[in-house]
Length: 261
Image (cartoon, rainbow, N blue to C red):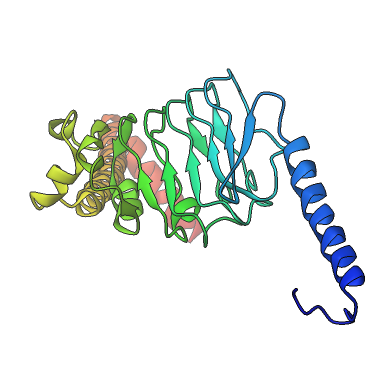
């Protein structure tokens, strides 16, 4: 018999054990009862596994059991992962969001599970880009394959901080790119060849600034040339006008000016 505080009699000990057992059973029943209608919840050796696969879900359920360890949301129609979508699932270790229609992942999408999450599957979605802040604190192994990625400096910096699944990393390809020659190629292969999208970005920015400055300079030069030519034309016309006047009129004008002076 276990020695519980205050337990000095076999009857009392048995009663205490029964009460605690009932409480644990009640907690388990409540957890199962809170399972979303479109999901199936099961206790696998003390770990709550929630299956919501292929249920035509368009949003992530909000009434998930708080003790969920593994959450399967694959093969649905989810379009985005909003902020704080899993904030109450502090025990969550595996999250499968593969084969959905996810296009947007918000900055605080995985807030509350960054420390404990061990596997995050985002493969087979419609993700073009992802904010660095959304994944930067995750320690999980991440699958990002088969998404229409836009290969640029932002994506390069995001991947640099992640623990990518080695089995799927070669399936992360450039659907679009800052440079056309990399479209359709595996991103890891491009980066391993020495390409740095951040340098390309800086060079593109420098060229854009140079073109802008050249444009402004050309406008200033054009204005100066126009101004000089316009004044020269006015001066020439005035000189021709003076030459066209009769000589006696010019003399009279000069005499009048002398008298006034």
